[in-house]
Length: 239
Image (cartoon, rainbow, N blue to C red):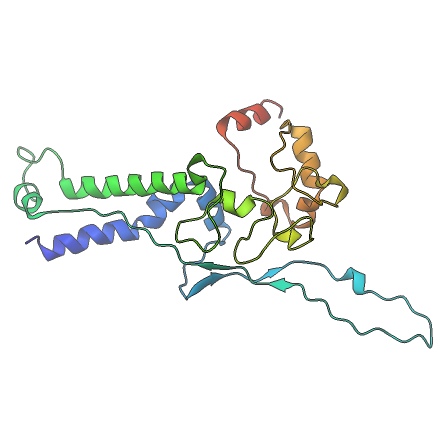
């Protein structure tokens, strides 16, 4: 049987290294982690309280003897996500224990345990990157599925995400929709997500500053823009 200390040490190295070696090498997840927007605290669900609207429309102008209104506007929502589970098995057998571990440099060409852990880091990192961008597919994973959801599920218009249904035409949870380039008039009734637009620095600034994107930002730190290297280099050339 494998040595129990070796078995525990190998697993501990993998688990404790997960955040640094896997999360922190995936740029989007690294940024979310930096903003403290990843929840690890357990519980039956993953939930986050969000404020969805403003209340300036409740302001009343009045004169003396006018009856004052008494209104309340519900603005809080709590998106809910169920836990998703994954594993990457790393097998370490008795042969590796007897023939490799502890051998001197003349015998051991490679430390198998250390090699397996490094391969585990790399495998999970690659798997995360693929999942994050939906394996290149534009078809989102349905809400509530046991499969990990991606940016496509989060940003796809007029679909349920985090148990909250979304509809531009019905005005349902518009604040939970991905941004729409047709929203310059602040009145989007249908998605133009499948329409091709030219990405330029001017258009990008216009979409940010003249749509609801800017309305939802407390500071520039709230904004994250994800793009492929080709588009990034195109924008960089305009700077």
